[in-house]
Structure formats: C-alpha cells, structure tokens
Length: 225
Image (cartoon, rainbow, N blue to C red; front, side, top):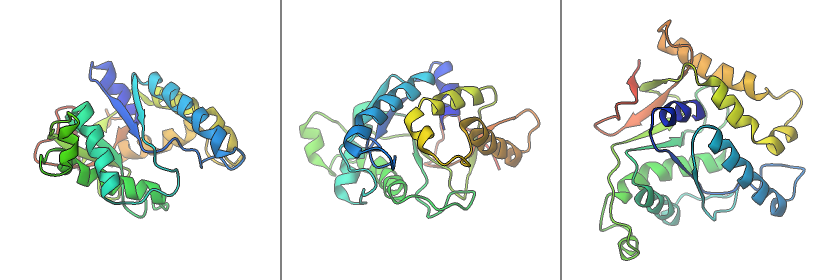
C-alpha cells in the first residue's frame, strides 16, 4: 500500500493514516508499555517516507480488537475528520490473496471500515459525532487491499523503493522477526511484482490489487482484470 501512497502524494494528493492501535503486542521480546510509543514513532517515520504527515492513533488494544459499534464509530469519526475521497483498508477475509491466514485485528478493522464508510455519511447514525462538530461525509470509494478478489489495480511502477524504505523504518519490528522471514526488499518485491503479473501489461512492473466498492472509483485507480 505504501507504494501507491508514494505515487499519490508525489502527484499532489493528500493522504492521512488512521491506526486503531499502536502495535504494542507485535514484538515478542519487547514489553507493550515500551513498544507502544516506539512503534508509534516508527510508524510516523515510515509514513513520512511516502509523503504522509498526518498519522492518528486510536486507543484500542493491539491483538484483541473486537468488531462492533464502538469500532465503527471510531472509524466513522476519523473519516468525518479527514473527509477523504478514497478510504483504503486491509482485507477482512480470513486469508490474504496468497492464502496466508489473516490476523484477527485485521479482519475486525477491515469489516468495520467497510461499514463505517456508510456510517460516516449517515447523519442519523452516531448523532453524537454531529454534536461534536463532525458533519456527515460520503466517500467516493473504499478499496480493500490484499484480499482474494481484486477488481482494480494501481500501477506503482517506480515507487517500489519508496515502499521498501518506508517498511525499513519499522526497525524494531523488523529486527525481531525470525532470520528466515523475508527482508523488506524481498517481501515487497514479491507482492507488487505478483500484482504486475496479474495485470499482464509489460509497462506495469509493480501493481497494487485492491477490491474497490462504491459506484465511482477515483481517477487515480486504474481498472484491472
């Protein structure tokens, strides 16, 4: 996703991130109390590499996020604050497109984000948000990344190194991974490289393959098979 973000910000688009947790349960060798601020700092550094200056964090506990109305409300509030044309989220499917098991938090947040895009545009859902000055906002599209049924592609040719550098900013997390886990350059070369193969256009070297919902997709998304 960072490669697509780099493409968009380099073209003058404004992108912001909203993360429900600080990833505090993600490093086995590091106490969550210490991991939370450290990982938040690394996320901000990672975002900055691809031109993102606004990174918000929710207060949900890493690893135990539950789908429900409070989660939908938090995401809807973030959408109303930032008023985006396009919302991107990770798939809520049980497995990623490559068949690997998807983590519980990802599934809960992915599904809640789909629902929250509708909630954000409905004045009569979460009326307390209007009382707080957050007027309804209708997004043009929501794109689900890494799912099994992509409908579009984003040509990210020329931005792979941006994505690699962005992922490398998560230094503490990367250092704690097993020695045989793919390094950022290998991992990210495989994923958008495989996306380009699915597109089948020789001019597309790397591609992000999202599933896009809503009637009108933003012009920065290109239709793919």
